[in-house]
Length: 143
Image (cartoon, one colour):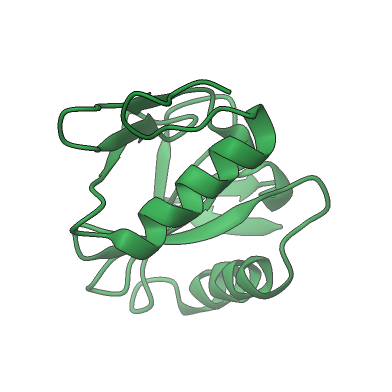
């Protein structure tokens, strides 16, 4: 897909983008593959590319992709669409149950607590168990 951002043209393989963030104000942020450069598109300044990206994100949410595990996570009032297969590590804190992971190609960390975000928390636990065989819960943290 070709988009315009900050007076430059980018040709991006969106199937390699691993996370999108849709903020409360409507902006969509994603990070270019293999680097930590965020691209932030908003409806007012770039309506055509904004719609292209929004259509792609909606397609991902509905269909997903082969060999992908896309999930929607609500975190800090933003909606993240993340391919969990691209997350390289998860940190579990047994004292409070929090799970932390870092978005690929960025410095953004996501911290999910079982009480504040139970649906996303459950999705992440299920993903970890399905893909690794490990169960993250109290003292039974290994299969």
